Image (tube, rainbow over all chains, first blue to last red; front, side, top):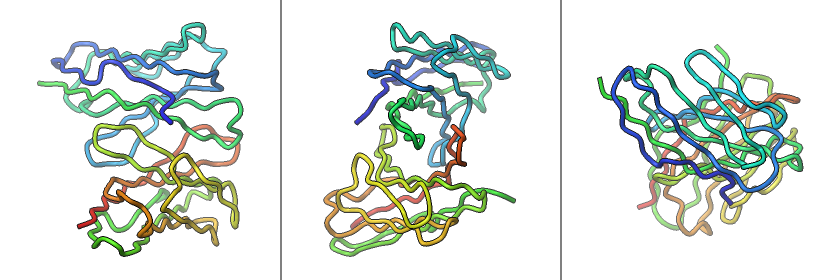
Length: 113
Length: 112
C-alpha cells in the first residue's frame, strides 16, 4: 500500500526558479526520505529527515517535516535543467525494523532552460 | 567501483513463461529489496531479504519468487502466476544499521 502522497503530481518551472513539492503520509514514521529518479533509471537518495527533526539542508535542497500534520516538503532552490526528474518521498515506520520504505507516487519536475 | 547491477536492462517474454531477473551488489550490504514500478506510480515492495538464506514477502509478492543463497545476489523470478508482469523492476540494497537504500538501474520487463 502507498504510504505517501506527493503534491503536485507534476511541476514545470524555468531555470533559476525554486521548486517545491509536498508529501503527506498516513502513519507514524521513524524517518522520511526523498529520492530522485531520472527517466528510466534507478532511484538516487537525496536527503533523510528523522521524526525528531523539523528541517534539514543539503546543498540546494531544503526539507521540512511536520509530524503533527504528517507532511513534508522538499524545496529545490535555483533549479537547473539537470534537476528534471521525478521526486519521491518514502517513509520508514517504527515497526519496520529492516528499513522497509513506503513510497508515494512521485512528483514529476520539468525544468526548462 | 562499488554498486548494484541489474541484468538485463530490457527483457521480453511470452505469456506463460517464467523469467529471472538478476541483481548483484558488491557493497557488502546485508539487506536487499525488490520493487516494482508501474508507469506514473511509486515503487511497491515485492520481496526483501535481511540476510543470506532469509527473505520476507513484501506488499505484492503473489506471482513472484526469490532466493538469497549468496550475500551479493538476490535474483527475482517472475512466474506465470503473475497476472500482469509488464513493469519496471528495481533492486536495492542497504547496509546493516543504515537508512539509505542504494538502487540498481532497473530491468524493464515486457510480456508479449
